[in-house]
Image (tube, rainbow over all chains, first blue to last red; front, side):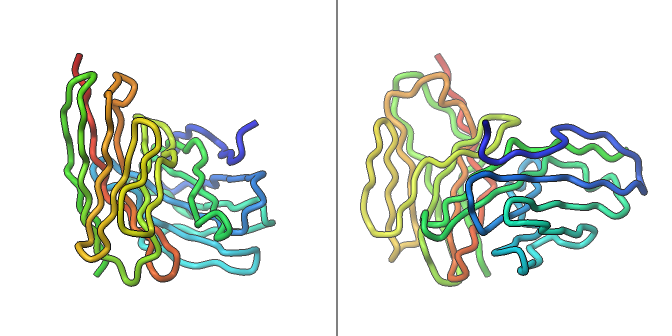
Length: 113
Length: 109
């Protein structure tokens, strides 16, 4: 079984809809991240969490919110989706004891029409 | 500000050697990572350098010069499956990764 899983893997939605992307991990890592990837722009950090009670904004948090329900679960929400949020979204985990190497989930391809 | 620069695209021949360069500027420095990413897939870890010098791992090697803010990834005996994007990322003083846009490597027979 994969260490970091994301659901759904693909989603098509309409402008204005609320969307939740979920991430679960079995690696026992404290740190979790949400990124989006757009062609030619690389990975951009949306939110990150260093433990259950810690949530931090990343480079591009506007229009997004997160919830860290447990050590193993980190959800990303788009309260009112807009077309420029169409992107590939990745969840990642890390542990300082492992030089903070980040392990990525398989990604969610989101299309907002 | 923080910034990672790497070439957008490179082309190489199967069986040859290719070097992908990366220059970085981070607030503090806790290491330099290289990841491989095949189209539509998740990035996967290749290497981590925190001290100056060359780290060799099979066909892949990574070099770091902290004084120059420079790293490179060297791929030897190129295979068609090495066609992918290679992402350079610097870790800043808060242990956050600052990502480059990636170098798309095209391997030709």
